[in-house]
Image (cartoon, rainbow over all chains, first blue to last red; front, side, top):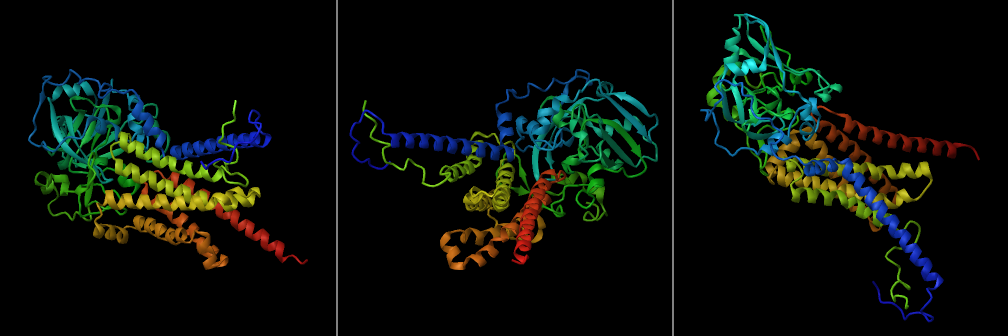
Length: 337
Length: 216
């Protein structure tokens, strides 16, 4: 503030002019503060800043939401380590469960964690249909009684060029398929997500053609790396991660890992996979991780591991080339991306 | 009691003239999202992919300010009030400011300042090319935003040059549109607002022409 001139005589009474100025000052200050605050709050809201702050203060102790594993799993014990484990540092449970793409639970990365609890994981039945010896409706706990649970630490590479390392719990998909006794005409396996806007409110908006469908060639599906996961970090899957059962195919982009599966169908024809149907030039049916085949709108040459600041190079087949490259021998992977 | 010796003849913080609080309020209010972003980074509340979240927010802020600055003239046309014009320049400069932060975040954190990779990205990817072009268009507008520059260029040319803001706004919306994976609602909202603003300008221009074309 500037130096003041000598004070006016008759100092006990506030002069009229000063009184007016003070009122004016207070009015201006109030208008300034109100406008600045409203504008700031509006902008923060517009860019979605209010929401993540709310998530941060929400009292949600880590992992407490995840139910323990079902006792039904064969033998009860968990097999580990797996020969496929990566020894890279695991992505934190917090990040694995709060940074998700599950459009049926909302379009932003933080939405699925907020509404994941809407999924009711039990009772859960899976319809087995198509080219199998005996089509049937299988209870999930029955399936879990057939196989011991294994922990497998896999890399997960999203098509959006970020990645995680996740300790999944589950069993090899091939073991289930063998048990279903496919006929000789079974060339593909089709998976379908639950179709219920009550549990998956995102399905009220037709962002994609619900229910979500994904598929694998049968030799991919029976590859020992492909698994059906029912848990991660030693606990049952939370809704946002695809409770109660999901596909994990670590050499493919994450969107192949269909969540909350209610139907497994064996077919002679290649299934119409949801993202592939929605944007065939951007998302291939195979969707093998390939640093040489860019997404039309962004590069796939590198990725950001969640929790790290710098990008790292993306590996062919997400680092699983030694295991799976032979599945695609003779195929042009630029055409069949 | 003696009156406090302050307050007597100070300008009391606010400049003279109508709505003296407006510009300071817009100046401070426009910085709030940056502060909230910085607080988010410091407290780790921006989610797992901090760089992506920061990029998204800064880019969206650039677009919001660009659209807001473009809304000033139509708003003045509709309301016949002067205040939107008073904050137009500041909004435009904030658009440039946030666009520059958005681009720097991309260059530094997303590409680790690998200029070769950045160049390849710009040339190869329409989505990045479009965004980069929008930024480049904003540079001369920011440089010529001062009264001195306006005088030097002359108002007619200055006005023509600053129509580039509309091109930059359209490119910004396209950049946003190309970026989203599936849900195009938000970019479409901005496209719609931009379209309405442009329509108001055209309508105002047509009305003005008709009036002046009428015989006296």
